[in-house]
View: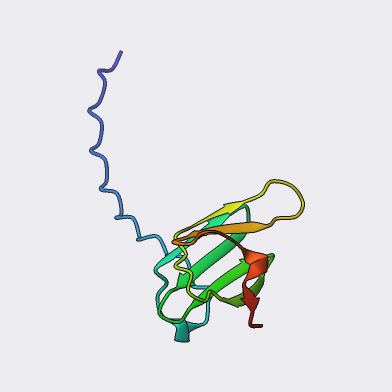
Length: 102
C-alpha cells in the first residue's frame, strides 16, 4: 500500500465583483429621491424639493404632484385593488387623492 500524498494547496479565489445597484425608474431630471422603496412589484420614489411622487406599477411609471405632503413611508392594501397609502406629516395620504401628472 502506497502512503497518502499531501494535498495541493487551494488556488486563491477570484474577488467577487460588486453587485449592480437598482437602475432608477424615475426621470433623471428629478435627481435623487429623499425616500424610495418597493413592495409587491410596485416601486415608489419621493422628491420633496420638486413636490413629486413617482410610482412604477406593472412596468408603467406615473408621476404625481405631492403638494405640501412630505412622504415618509408607504403601505399597500392586500387584495386585487393594489391601492397605496403614504404617510406624511399630515397623516395618511391615499394615492388617489394626489393629482396625476402623466
